[in-house]
Length: 229
Ligand SMILES: O=C(O)CCC(=O)C(=O)O
Ligand SMILES: [Fe+2]
Image 1 (spheres, rainbow, N blue to C red):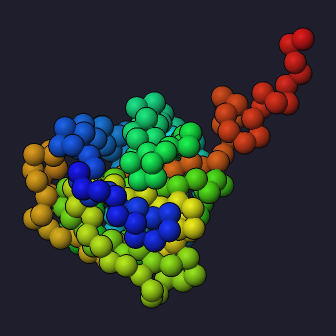
Image 2 (image 1 turned 45 degrees about the horizontal axis):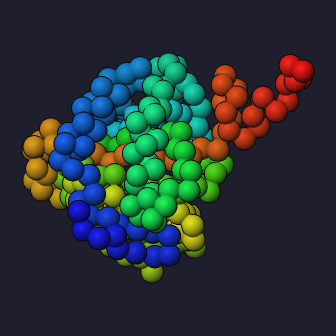
């Protein structure tokens, strides 16, 4: 692992943060999630466009531009639980980037698979009701990651390479920075991760949404129930 590098205030790149073993375990977990309960798919945008990346979610299902527990735009199933080990991984990631995890409790992850031709246009991650940081992990082929400003999709931005095992965290003043993936560099992956080609990106986030079934989060139901006395 190299030392953390600040790209902008609140945006930190930690090259080679994940060990090879951790990358392998994440590839295995993502492969399983890609098969169900909600299969990985190309997200269809409201105006009919289709994203070139393939996505599967855990914890909450994202579709433009909201989070739900069930994947109404795929097969109607409830997405897989957000595992405790991923909360712990998210906390270790924040501690590595910022020196302290501050009680970070991600409740959703978007898992994106990029083939050699896939890209992601400049966008903000703003469907979350929480301003908590986004933790991004990359595995497989290296990509060019464009990290911009909070005002618009254009310059100033920074182009950096995200390679297998890299951590990128954006929070604080960078939380709503525009970002995207203009290019994946085929043939740059180490097959020892279990991913022979393509790029896997996992972003953990805090939705800030209540879970009506469990009473977690904002609008916690527990607070509104009559006390047992
Ligand atoms: O693939 C990446 O590095 C970024 C993914 C991303 O921005 C997103 O899923 O919102
Ligand atoms: Fe994003």
